[in-house]
Amino acid sequence: MNLRWLNAILWGNSVALSWMWGLGLFFSVQMTYMFGLQGLLMFAVPNAVGLALFGFLTQIVANKHSGGQESLAIFFDKFSKPFRLILYIYQIVALSLTVFGLVNYLFVPLQLATGALFGLYLCLVVFVVLAAGCLFGEEFGIQKIKLGHAMMGGLLVLCVGTILFGLDPFKPEPFQWAAPFPAEWTGPSFFGYAIPLVIGLLVGPWLDLQHWQRAIQIHRENTSIRSSYIWGGSIFFLMLLFHGCLAFWVMTKMGVAPSVTPALDGFKYAHDLVTNYFNTTFAPGSLMPMAYYSFLAICALTTLDSGYIALKWFLGKNVEKSDN
Image 1 (tube, one colour):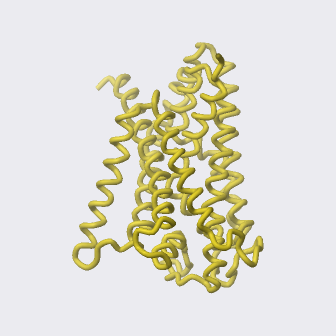
Image 2 (tube, rainbow, N blue to C red; image 1 turned 180 degrees about the vertical axis):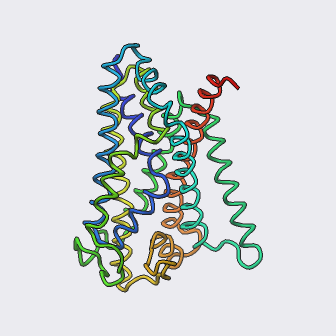
């Protein structure tokens, strides 16, 4: 029985989860805070299209180069040689932002420790988050990561379902495309973010070792890279849409502009908007906030384990070729 379509879906799920790193995960909330649902779509659509485009083009590369199921791996060895340091730094920055985002926008607002213990608490959180990512990455590896992420994806669906069924009312009132509190954002305009988003669409996945490693492994398994990344882009789009719409629901439910302290540049950033709402509105240990916190943790963990696997693979390849 030909189950390549199932393999493509499994890889697509893994692609989406590995791309939900800190910046994208919480920036969907910030874009919704700044520009409403139109800002969310302006952020989500190019990112999802960028993933699908990466799969579409790497499939062409894999088909046109000789080497059979190793053709893409051979191409990447040649392609990456001048950019090894850039690829390595990009991956480190992505993983660092993931840890920063999870700690700063989840664990800091929760205030599980205060006073003199707060610094120690944050250090322990960073250590546990990194250790969990390395542990899962070491346990699964690239051959089994799609199965591990399938389990994580199932848990993620349960978390999302729990949150959606707990929304009251389900549809925010009033429903509008613009930001609920437009006067709160005094930074760059809606179109001021167009160029950065287009640049992210064009270069984002191409500099990410996770995606190159996945595309190579997908091709080795004789599965369509194109189909896998179309699934990945679609799932990723739905995840961003859920998180941004949840932020929009929270703002309309509150009815007043959220209390946000301006940053050093004088602008207001509300990446932790949803976390603060669940933390202050629901009793500790309630199902809704626990589902949301689990959603964030799964998104971060599935990025960290993927990043660990990709860095281990990339460094191993380069050490083998080193003359020193």
